[in-house]
Image 1 (spheres, rainbow, N blue to C red):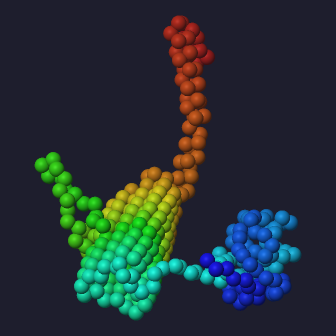
Image 2: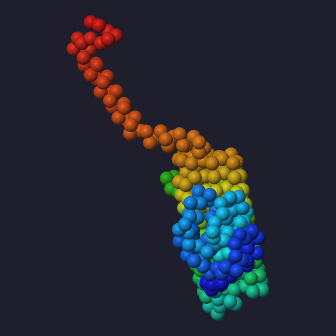
Image 3: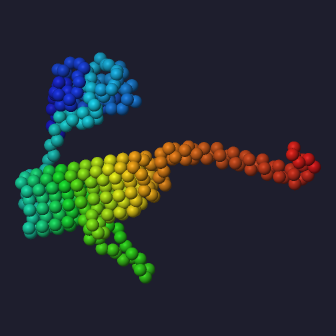
Length: 358
């Protein structure tokens, strides 16, 4: 990426912030608070890291929240959301310059009745089957396969070696990373006479606008109807989404999460890394599912669940605290057992106890 040089005034204007310090300070790079050097700008989003703003701070400026009361000898830019503002600064200093083949490469294979909008780019060895439709300014990089009747919106960017099976529908401005497979068969079998018979999967996958799909994600086509990924949802690498799953708008699904068939995920849901959901359940809006949680039943909106089987966070904390005490409890039970055995042996030999004199 090409790197630019900007002043604090330019950055302040970009992020709509309030500058405390010299507007002519030149910024040449970005970094974290601990690693930043002179000429770089850093940011503080979490108050618990405020201690990093001490004497060892080398950054030339820091983006902070408007709520932070502390003042520094270094310039500050106060904003509503430091993380978002810092992202804008990164984009300003390092303009995104994706390198891709522009136009239709001579090795691309384009089927019959394919419709391409203006500014569409097809990289080397891209395959478009019959009746594919792609709207304006979409980029499909090398080695990607687009199946029969697939519809792709405008401004989509598909990285190399993606597989998109037949009749998939992809909205505008989606980003799909390498190795993703959209529209593979749902995992459905019936047992008869001791054998497993494949159930036909005749539905489709629908990816709505502004969705980002990470590397090696698999999203299965529906048995009937649609598997749907809602508008604005972001999916990390190595996620499995089964047939007939519906994911609501603006949700986050983190690496190695797995969602079983016909589950419905609400809006603004966060599924943390390696969590697993059984099929045919509903996850309400604004739910957070913790890392490695095993969700076995529906979760009401606004709930934070952890553990396996997943339970509300305040309940799971007590369970985890109990687990930590298990070694002491085992020792205590063993000691009590030993004392009981000694008392039993003593009484068996005609001994006396305080409560039972013989």
